[in-house]
Image (cartoon, rainbow, N blue to C red; front, side):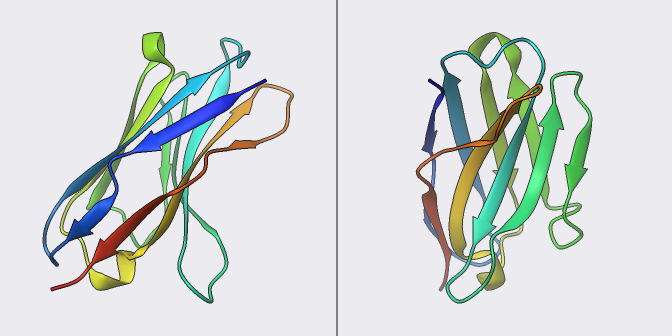
Amino acid sequence: QVQLVESGGGLVQPGGSLRLSCAASGRIGDIYIMEWYRQAPGKQRELVASITTSGTTNYADSVKGRFTISRALIKNTVYLQMNSLKPEDTALYYCAVVPYGEERYWGQGTQVTVSS
């Protein structure tokens, strides 16, 4: 069983920063992709960023240049550094992991609210 525990969400003013963390436990193997998604009220869940175990990253156009995804392989942990936050970044942020050849596992989500 794979479990994901997210932390780091909260309330921040526009232009501020937050760092999300997600720790994976269980049998995820040595090859996997870790992802951050977000879902705003009334909108579909969207992929924000992803990173492979080899370090290849991918970002949504809306966050390029502002968000940075990174990982600590030893800890099976992924981070999302979010800078220059905008009100439209407000959403429930989900961590996900896709072990090689397996289904996607989801975390419980952490709320990010950008408001003055």
